[in-house]
Image (tube, rainbow, N blue to C red):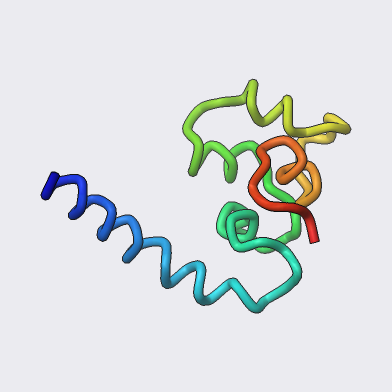
Length: 85
């Protein structure tokens, strides 16, 4: 139990500064902005896999128009993390 609590605290310490820094930047939700590491408004397969591991199938399923980029709307529509702004 102690190990689980320490892991949760560690995860919060890693994610919180990024989330706090990104929350007010735009209408995008923080989870999308964390994935969009180069801040170009779309998530590429390498950006997606940096957080979700090698999962080209999930990326392809989320990429509705199959252009190789996830927009904010595609990401949220497919993965269900909140609703698009």
